[in-house]
Image (cartoon, rainbow over all chains, first blue to last red; front, side, top):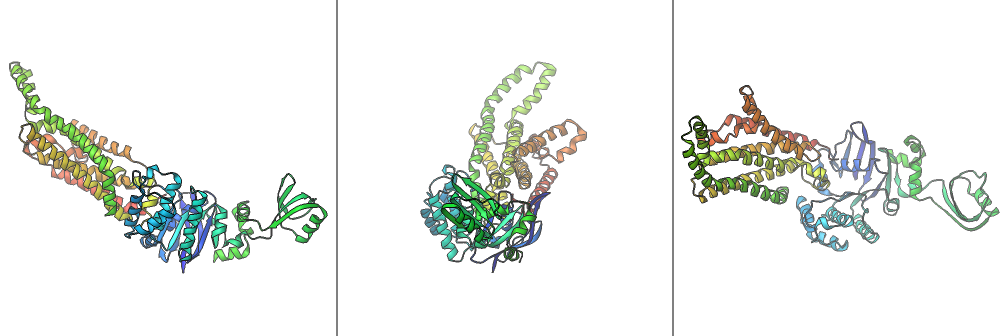
Length: 307
Length: 260
C-alpha cells in the first residue's frame, strides 16, 4: 500500500513558489528521507500532507485518505514531530502529553511514561523552563505516544544531544521494525544515509532525484584521497580537488587503470578510494540549474521517481 | 470538550483580573453613593434659593438623587467600555494565537476538525463573558444591599442589555481572530473605541441617529433602561444579526485557511 502518494501536487503562495508538480510515493514500512535546503519546499509538502495548507492543484493521499476531504482520518493515524516544538506556556510536560492524548481520544499514559524514561524527560517541569532540546523531547513523546501508523518527522534531531539522538533513532527503528512508516525531512545527510531505505532530493519545489539511498549516493565518480606526491596534470576526470599539506583529495570520474598508473609512478604513502558520500552527491545535485540537475540524475532514479 | 476546558483554564487568570477590576470600580461608585446622596441633599437646600442656577442644579440632583440613575451613568463607561474591552480581548486572539504563537502545529495536527476547534473556542469565550457579567451583577446587587440602598427596579435589565453588547463585541472579535494570522489586539481596542465614538457622534446630531442602529452602544442607554425599563429590542436584534454573521464568516474562512 502507498502510505504517501502525491500526484502533480502544486502549492503556490500567490506568486511565490512552494512545491511544483510533485509526484511521490512512499510505501508501507519504509523509512523515507526527504532532503533539501531551507526554502526548497520540504515543509510545504509536510504541511500539505497534514492538511495545514491546501494544495493549489494536484492530489495527495496519506494512508489511502485524501488530504483535503479525509484529513481527520489521516491525523488519527499520524504522529507529527515539527522542527520547532512550541507548546502552551505555563503548562507542565505531563499536562501537554495528557492534552495530546485527550485530543486523540486515547489513553497513552503508559507509553508516554516509557518514552519519557527513555528520553530522560521530567514530566513535572513546566514547558517555559525547558531548553530547546527538552521541548523537542516533549514533541517526540507527543508524536509517538499513541503509536501512529505513520510518523512525519521534520528535522527530528535538531536540539538533541548525540546520546539522545542515538536513543531517539533506536526508538524510531523499533517502531519502523514493527511496521510504522517513517517520513523524515532533514538536511543532516548522514542521518538519512544511515537510516533511510529511500530518499528524495527536492530543489526549488521540484523533486530532482528519488531512489534508494545507496543508489542516490552512487555515481561513476570515486572520492580519492592520498598522502604523498603524484603528478595529476592532464589527467581527465579530476574534479573538486583539495590539497591540504601533503594530502590530496579529489573526485575522479575517469578510467581507474589510468589513475592507478599515475599513482604508481608517483610517491604515495597512503591511499583511500571510496564512493562519494551523500553529502557530496547532495552538493552536486544543487550545483547548476534545476534542469541541468535533472539530466545528471541516474536514469534509474529519475524513472522510478516519475513513476 | 477538551479544547473548551483547556481554553477556560487558560483564560481564568484574565477573567479574574478583569472581573475584579470592573467590580472594584463599579463597587466604588455604589459604596460612595450614600455619602454623595447626603452631600447632594445638603447642597440642594443651599442652591434652592438661587433662581435659574437652582433649576440647572435640580436636573443634576435628579440624576444623582437615586442609585439607579447614578449607576446608569457610571455603568456606561465601566461596564460598557470596560466590559466591551474585556469581551474583545477574550475573543480577538482566541483563534489567531495558535498561529502567531506557533502552537497551531501542535493543535491542528491532532484529529480535531477546525470547525470543532472554532466551536469549543467560541463557547469558551461566551462562558467567560457570561461569568463576567453574572459575577459583576451579583456583586453589585450584594453591595447595593450592603450599603443600605434598595436594588433599582431595572437593575437586571440594565446588566442583561450590556451583556448583549459584550457578546456582540466578542462575536465580531472572534471573526477577526479567525481571519487574522497575527495578533489582533489593536483591532479589538479599535473596534470597541470606534463604536463608542460612533455612538457619541450619533448622539450629537439627529440626522446621524441611524448610527445608533450600527453601534452596540446605541442600545445600551443605561438611563432609559433604569428609568422606565425600556429595552430597544430592534437595535439588539440588529446587533445580534451582525454578531451571527461575523461568527458564520469565521466558520467559512477558518477551515479553508492556510496555516503557514
